[in-house]
Length: 397
Image 1: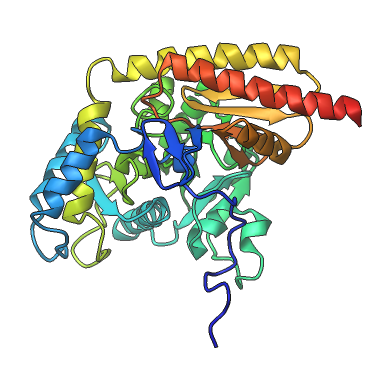
Image 2: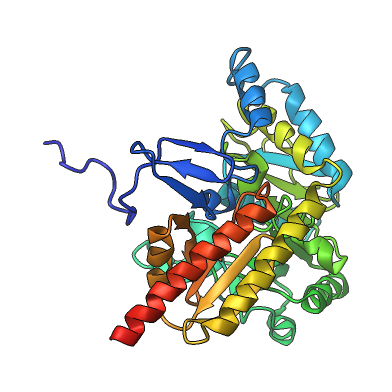
């Protein structure tokens, strides 16, 4: 018997349908336009229907959609080469998602110690508030009870400490520790940036203890913070890094990047994927890099981020009963609410601007990186109107 609602009931969906988008704007079938400061949760890095991405996808679709990794895929090699040229990495494995990129990162770290005669070193230190994906291994790595409940025994091998607590990390390291895994800026956890000092201290600790540093840059990477990757602000390099979201500009794919040393155990037959690195994804990924790596693109991100940050700081000063903090880096910003973040998201939606709720009572602002200063000021006006409405309602209550 068919269910009246045939989809899994795993989402509390917003009752708005969008049928088209352009740049930082989304449009409903009725013609209502919304300023998109959610970007599909930091996915639409170049906005909607970016002409260079559309052209690249259409051109590839006319030639070839899918090949298994049994065959050479030239654009995989090209994109991997380009990524290794602009990062710490020597090796790249392409995936379909961020969770799969994290799975590959975890397996890479464990396998490294296995092939180097230390199979007992498999445990990974992670941090409270983390979000690394929805697979059984990545929910165990994230450690949040709401994601673990009801899915059986927690996957073994993860030790969690308070976010950014270097001393707690030191105390947790044992002879079984293979790596630490951390987001330079926690996204789902509430736009909580790790300080540059803490990131450098963790890098030094990994070097001293002979363990690997894994960075989850699924949300913070590909220009989101004003550098190509967020860890660059601290002047450090990881051993392994998971990337997704913005690298596909809306097309689903991710990547695990690693040094040659860290990836020395990932030999033929140890890992694989059916769809990962398919020609469609590689065409889009190369097109995204074409734009992100253009001179002036990242300075533009920082310029617009400054406009937003200053405007949000002013709103915090004027609405202290509603906004307790503004935080983040680049165009990965968070409004920590003094009351309900869901109320602010709803109020913003009423002003036709989209944001994303996160942990720690935060509303995430994750606009496409192509957003202009004028559009940023438009967003600030809409957020102010939302705060003013909440303020009036609070006074009325």
